[in-house]
Amino acid sequence: AYGIVGLVFWPRLSVGPDGLRVHTPARRAAYAWPEVDTVRLDERRRLGLSTGTLEIDARGELVVLSRWALGADPREVLAVVQSYAPPK
Image 1 (tube, rainbow, N blue to C red):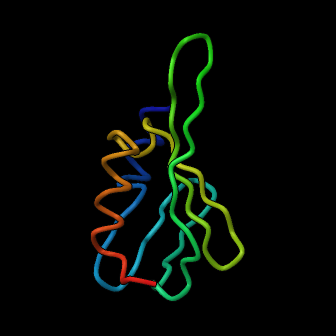
Image 2 (image 1 turned 120 degrees about the horizontal axis):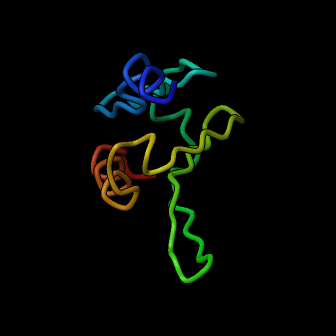
């Protein structure tokens, strides 16, 4: 079932000069850059392992994307998102 969800809802996050697009089983949304409040990395250590998620706060909604959902390291994705985001 996870494989099918991964294929149908791919890519989960698209970034461009106009903003972000999120495509998940629960949500399809496009956020223009002025609507995006923060994009941050949430890192936690558990049982000696470090895990990270990408958190997008836009329009009062919180979207949390894991490494599995992104298909890449959330740190790398954050760097790409930040390269497109206009300065605040």
